[in-house]
Amino acid sequence: MAAQVSDFNYDSNERKRLRCLLDSYAGDNLNRDILSYSQRYDPQTRLLNHHSFQEALSARLGSLPAGQELALIWIDLVSLRRESSLWGWKRAEELARRIAGNLRFVADDNALLGRAGDSSFVVAMEASKRNKANWRRIQAVVDALMPQGQSLSETRLAVSAGVAFFPSDTDSVEDLTRFAILAADRASCAKSRNLIAFRPRMNTTILRDHLLEVEMRKGLNQSQFRIYYQPKVDLITGKVLAVESLMRWNHPELGEIAPSEFIPVAERTDLIHRVFEFNLRKALEDARRWRNLGLPLPVIAVNASVASVREDDFARTVRTIMAEIPIAPTRLELEVTESLAFDNEELFRARVRQLKAIGVRVAIDDFGTRYTGFNVLKKLRLDTIKIDQCFIHGVGRCQDMLSLCRTIVAMGRQLKMRTVAEGIEERGELEAMRQIGCEAGQGFLFQRPVEAEDFTSFLRDWPELKRAFAFVDERSLFEADALCAAG
Ligand code: C2E
Ligand code: MG
Ligand code: MG
Image (tube, rainbow, N blue to C red):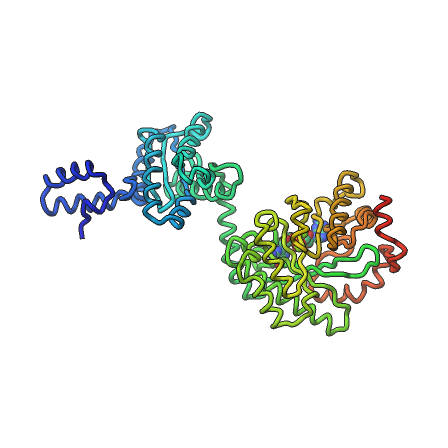
């Protein structure tokens, strides 16, 4: 069925003018022209729709004089989607019309303008990558998008834009759009910038991420993943207090892939939940095996990504897996990085409460990297603080680092939390942390992460090995408190 004049959002004058124009056409012609218009333009903003924009862009690039460059700006307005869910579609469309008006006002006369989706706009304008003044023009286009005096004005950074240049970034129309979107995606994660230019690294990263995601989906079913274990040692008695489970991925063709590479990929997808469940199951099974072998069962620590912990059913998942593989709840510790406590304290507190109700321990991992204060920590009621390894490296030779660690240890003691120094590699670091009363340590100095079988041997042999580190079994001899006060 052909579109009607009333299908589009025209004001009454426009509608009259258009009706006169349409009346001068007859039957098929009229229907064909309206149809063609509705196929080319977004009815709300009257900007080119995505498909026509791509066609027009292709034509423009094809006729671009040699030596000239064109910038493609992709703009995402997350706030427009939010506005739609808050106030309804009509209000969001009204805003979209105003945004389109702003775009027309600020963009060059011969710029191509389009609406690429509900909350995405595209602009193609002549601009050179190396010209600073051009950058200011592009930024002005992005900045002009928020309608002033609207509720949106408070969420200016909800605009995220990416720009790619033809031909310096690519001479393919398809890639030009893809690259601008990639850059816009980066801008949506950036803290202080709402416009980011495409860099070739973004393309290689996304292709690698995609490859890893596809391979991880397969690999999780094909036992390519294994869990390694690393002890956390009491710095005074040398007892193994806990063991951290760390994931390893050995891909048949890509080789060893580090967690620092595949965990962030998993975190951006649903895979992180499978990673967590895989890890928790395996760790609990191994813990039970050690107990059945009569070995002293330390607390088993499992890393839980912020992305998993955020999920509403996180605590339920933990409870379900613990029902499958029973273990005393206090024998399990979940390590969550500081970022959740920093970004969403309330959610973090709710999760800690749920986990505490189950009885499991909660540790704050990589502490010190996000400056969670004493007051926040006090409210969270966690069990363990793991001091990030960046504070431990060379701590024996650096008074400033030592003072910082001493403050964290004192804070932990005040809050009745165990402090663990991460990444102890040298004797000097061990001595320094012991001296300031840090309770436990983890690091290559004691043991690198190893597979379950090797860790079984480690647990068996450790009572002999610990003599090498001169641990003293009589805690009273060391009086950590007194040492700390003296230090
Ligand atoms: P993390 O939880 O802070 O784990 C400690 C990391 O420090 C591990 O790296 C460990 O191998 C490394 N490490 C331990 N001692 C030393 C040392 O003395 N020197 C140095 N330089 N490094 C040491 P790994 O296994 O590469 O893991 C890196 C990060 O990846 C982990 O940091 C954790 O955030 C994440 N991760 C690892 N496995 C998992 C997992 O199964 N699930 C989740 N969500 N994250 C994981
Ligand atoms: Mg950890
Ligand atoms: Mg850590």
